[in-house]
Image (tube, rainbow, N blue to C red):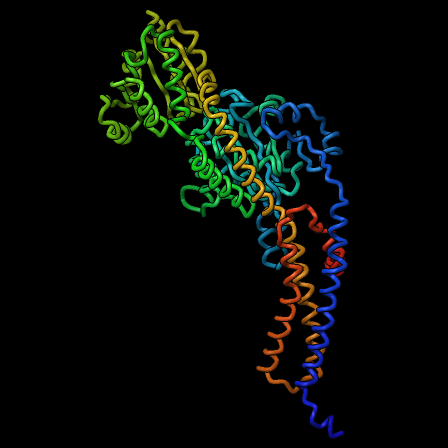
Length: 549
């Protein structure tokens, strides 16, 4: 009786905590010594064979996608990649995901998928039908995210490629929906569109974007402009809503992927000689002119009367390379005079004459060589227009190199006597020499990109453990709260301050007990022995808990 009289509630509660701590410590030791080795052994026994029909290069993917029947794709392709068919717009699911986050539920992120075409898979006639101006990239991404299958989206559209990057859980449904959108936008039938497209998923999609950003997939290997375009894609994809454009549609996955691509592109250019020297579409256009002027005009480029139509970034590079090949006089035409004067001011050593577009035909009649690089969505030079001027009468020689997409020069212009028209697809004649020079640099860049790919893949793999981590933390917290509630019924004399102290102590115990499992779940799977999400759920009974709730 005397012993009971002096026994305080604090002493009883400390005994209770000590017993709980010993029990959970024993469980932790059993987990580390018995359960974890078993999980690693099961992980090693799992088969590493995966069936996948997606090629690692776009030009290889075209044939496989077009040839594989839909029925076989459903059965054989683990990641559900190949698709045909048409669907309508599905209701937006973004609000549902926000509601899940608001309710404390974990959103399961999709994996990367890229669908598009490039100079390797499609002609300029097809590419221009899918081309989207930069200020409309976010509008297209928002339209893609209206499909229930698409979680995140970003668009990259340049003169040599059109690519849609998305994050989706079901690649089969997402590909089907994206193809339906591309058909509707381009006006092409499924039969005409699909042979020109490539589709890559998961690691192949990530590797492709890294190669694009590094300039390895460009028409002119090592060109610097593509890095700026990927950076612009990233900026638009994460941009907030403004008066000029809607908010970007990139989330956790695409935001990380595009940022990694930009950083990888910079890293490759700083660590290798892939970008040494002036390499761009504009430089290739000037090289083509150097080759063709003696054949088409019977004079070298340095003696040709040159006109440049457009005063954008591509025209600025044209000026640089024309000057390096001995051109001293250039006639510049643009819609606005202010931008043309700014461009001319950058080259004080050149004799630049500036006119507006209403002087197009008088200026062309005085020119031998013309470069077109405008943002016009239609052709400004056509066969009919040329025939209505001097070229249809006396056959005056004119060489036109069009580096715009959509095209500014109609391909039928070659049918006019004395006129020689070239577009970006004709630049392939001069890029082979560039590729041979940079072959060693390409190999060095590939090694660096493989390391960057491994980093992103490891991060992406860690995402699939996020739901398990959240459920495990929730389960431990529920147990803690329930047991503490029972104990508090016997400790009614505790003050509010004491109750708060007990709350802090029990939470600290739970956090320390969860430290080892959490560190394991967040760690990289370096040797391939990491337990799967299903195994973690089975060990801790997470599936049973979620189903019972």
